[in-house]
Length: 309
Image 1 (cartoon, one colour):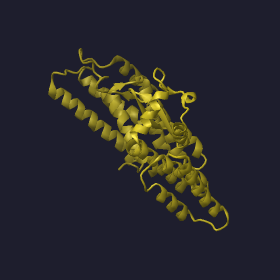
Image 2: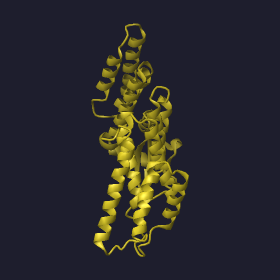
Image 3: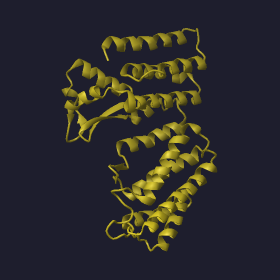
Image 4: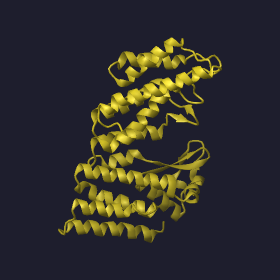
């Protein structure tokens, strides 16, 4: 993005802000309409910067529900840039400034003015470049996004962003391999369940928490391709998982996760905590059971909380 384009974007938002502050007055509907116009186009560094400046100017003037929706839309627009609209060549141009061992960008190495401006813009719009799997990847910086708007948004959304910080910075799986301990996996699932319990009617977060909850339950019960819950050679149920699950049952017996684990252990007991991978019918029955108990757990959480779709 050229410098003059960045200046034009900032001046546009400043002009809108002055119009609002001057006494002419903008209604909430007009503020939202102005933002929707900005994010209706392809996401670029320039449009992201314009969207960010706009939200910073107007979110504090809106009711919490409207401000929360606006920030959530900003998050979606950032993800649109990361997943669809970004210029991959521009993104990969940052690779020469990364330390390949640590995966951290050395800002002092960035001397080129255009590259420096691009990197600084990404930081401003809550995007964090990381070097991973031999390439630069862009990730939402949920830490700065949450901190910037914590006073304007619904506590439910703020708490969801705290959860997403952990998910983004330390993914539970990578290349179909579990990257965290089973106790940590349970802790993450519990944080989602508690968020649902505390904000049971909040439709703003319902889609995200439903997806997260389902993913965590599947990981807990079935593991991953490269981190199977039953050993591929012996067929024995993972002893570390069993120990962590039993400890969770003792400490959090009043949760839906504990209810799920109780049903899960009853099934495991019936098959003597072992899987015969050569028995296709046994494998199918296990996966069918896991799917069924996960669906039942979702209903316990979401239907009762009137959030489940």
